[in-house]
Amino acid sequence: MKYQRKLRLTPRCLHCGEKIRYGRTDKKYCCEDCRMEHNNALARDSRTFRRRVLSQLSSNYSLLSTVLQSGADSVPLSDIVSMGFAPGIVTSYARVGKHDEFGCFDIKYRMTATKLYSMFKIQNVSLNLHADIDSE
Ligand SMILES: [Zn+2]
Image 1 (cartoon, rainbow, N blue to C red):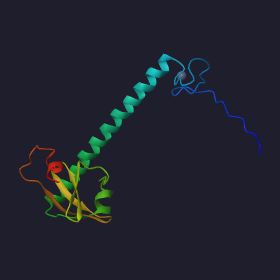
Image 2 (cartoon, helix red, strand yellow; image 1 turned 90 degrees about the vertical axis):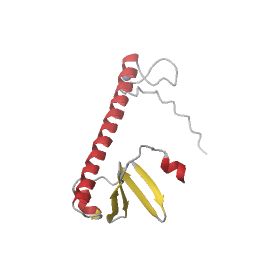
Image 3 (cartoon, helix red, strand yellow; image 1 turned 180 degrees about the vertical axis):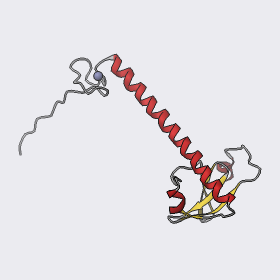
Image 4 (cartoon, rainbow, N blue to C red; image 1 turned 90 degrees about the horizontal axis):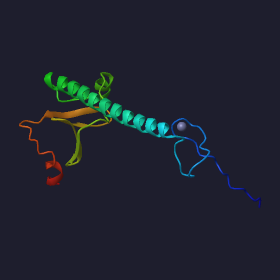
């Protein structure tokens, strides 16, 4: 059996990619500026992500409202997705009987791979946001 030498990789700065030539072996950044810039970038990405999710929720809500206002309580998933609905972004989820019930704020609906159905808007919305958890 051939003896294999352990590779000793020189660590690289997580921000600029430069080799870190001195300091502790678990050092992640080449300098303080890189450490701060990297952390700022992560915070920026996190804010951007949250802003996009909130924007998508708002868009989903408008689309669901439009369907409800037309008098329908179901819509083919492909139709609403083509209008910009993102099925993976929800504000609530609950198992109701044999069905999965999703929520976008005060609009609830069931969803299969092909359609959204049993859509309704909650009347008299209560702000007891933990009620779903407690009632199980
Ligand atoms: Zn660096």
